[in-house]
Length: 291
Ligand SMILES: Nc1nc2c(ncn2[C@@H]2O[C@H](COP(=O)(O)OP(=O)(O)O)[C@@H](O)[C@H]2O)c(=O)[nH]1
Ligand SMILES: [Mg+2]
Ligand SMILES: [Zn+2]
Image (cartoon, rainbow, N blue to C red):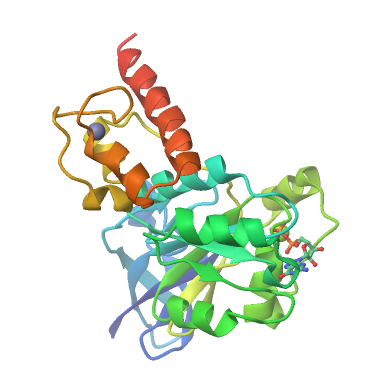
């Protein structure tokens, strides 16, 4: 009998697969995968065949929509990028860069503001205005405020948490899935990394979808982007009048539609300033592409 499912976890050459009927079946990969250089990866949609006795066999890996490398996980639908409304102070540039990385990988970025219980009003207002074009979430892992909306947003999707250290990623995961018992607080970056070398990322079934148990990465590879590709990472630019010049970088060109967004408030000076830094960085990368 052939069934399809979601690869949750790998242990050696065995894999735990969540089938459509909701059962977790341990499966062994066919030898042919290794010969073809295919590595079954957490998040893979796979087919398995149950044998009469013993384990099932993992027979096929369906085409991947995307693949993150560190930790290895395939087919992530959404990236919950967490920042803190109190401490640590938000690294807004990192948030903007992670949004771009996610979009470029085909993953929907969802900016999440945690620690609402100790919020600095200024940070909350900035978050609301600067990310109005995104499906943001405001919540508190501590009090549980906003967690219902988060749960709703995760329904049927494969989600992954990301963001600076100490913003509350592990606390949020624990609040959603208490059995995880993730360590929170005291862990230094170094300890965190040491742990990741001995422990592989794992997907946990959640609300008809799944969530990755490790917020393992803070950033992924950024390739060289063309200007129009960068524009596509800024949803608020869609409301802009067309710029006079094709390929406009929206920095020093006249009759720029994006700069008009500054006067309507759809783009704040702060987010625009970070945009300029990022756009100039990509321009430099494009220049040095073939060096
Ligand atoms: N006040 C408050 N503290 C929180 C909240 N979420 C997490 N924390 C605290 O922030 C610290 C870092 O949390 P942790 O989950 O380890 O962050 P991570 O490094 O992003 O995984 C811990 O001391 C948590 O107790 C929250 O919503 N409100
Ligand atoms: Mg953590
Ligand atoms: Zn422009």
